[in-house]
Image (cartoon, rainbow, N blue to C red; front, side, top):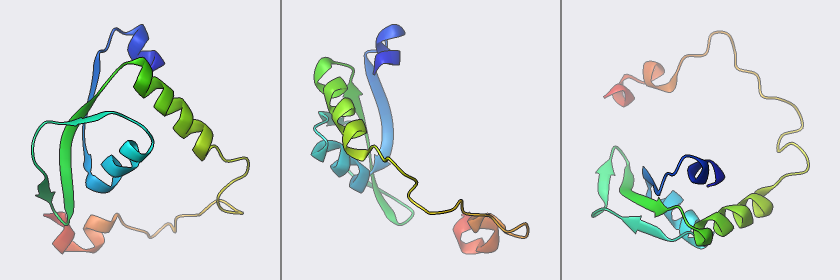
Length: 96
């Protein structure tokens, strides 16, 4: 939100799934939807925006403090095998 203030951005527009929208709301963000829920693949998604204001800035600060981790989530970095393929190439049904 600080960068938005610096660049005079008044709103952040996004498309996300309803689960992430719920997390934003639980985090205290004032979310605004543009319309109804739409199914994208297997996910229920929404389009909406967040107004760049002090309320949402405070919610962002709270979320950062809440989710701040003092140590790595995993004990060691996860290595990707050299032969690994992106999911959509390994499973043609996901390619579209």
